[in-house]
Length: 319
View 1 (spheres, rainbow, N blue to C red):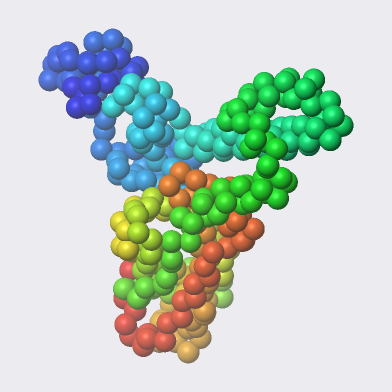
View 2: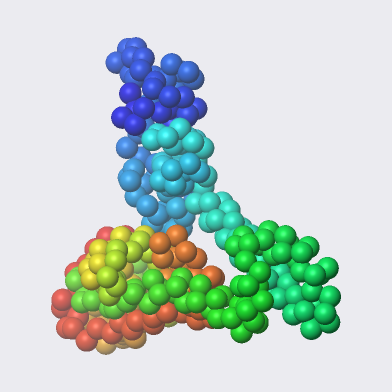
């Protein structure tokens, strides 16, 4: 039986049948036990269940529940905790972005109506026709949510802009708590393969730690994207859960040099380069960067990796 009490194939509550040693759903008859491997929907690569993103193409290996907003397996259809439908991660982000845009549009319409109402009320009072004009406007302004004519009269365009800027600043504050730094190089290795000039060539790699720190007083959940810009690699993603004033790190394997004429690492043509990693905070606490002042920044951090350790510290590994 699914420990949460819902079938992940059909969403039926409390499946409890057992036959031939396999727990099956009473509603759809499918086994409830999932395999220990999950297939990437983007490239088909098999990964260990519980992995958040595909190591080959960066696709999300989880879905988001439309009911309780918790994550579920990428090969499931319904949430095992509440029975609601699961959405793939990109569709979930697009829906959340659309919902946020709709809320922002409603807020802009409400503030515009308040401003227009204040102008009309003041004009009516100055013209001496306040008795006939103010009554319908009272009802109209009341539909904006607060029902206060006095507030509509007092709210100027500057106040409206200040309110909008305060909302954006509040969203941005969580992003400002996140700091990314480059940690130490934890291992060095090289791979020998076929070269364009001679029979063999080699590539040098280092594994470095990227440290993510939360300088705020409250915990944050953040989605980071990073790209090794020196070699034009694809974008990869990483979810991090940070306690208040806490930090965590994760490893990144980076190609830092090569020798295209020899597979011998001691050959004088072995070179190492300065490598850059661009890191972007895509989302903090379910707020997209597009709704903050960070949307104008093309990157948040640019980390550089250089290694001058002796080549003898590099260990050969197989492809």
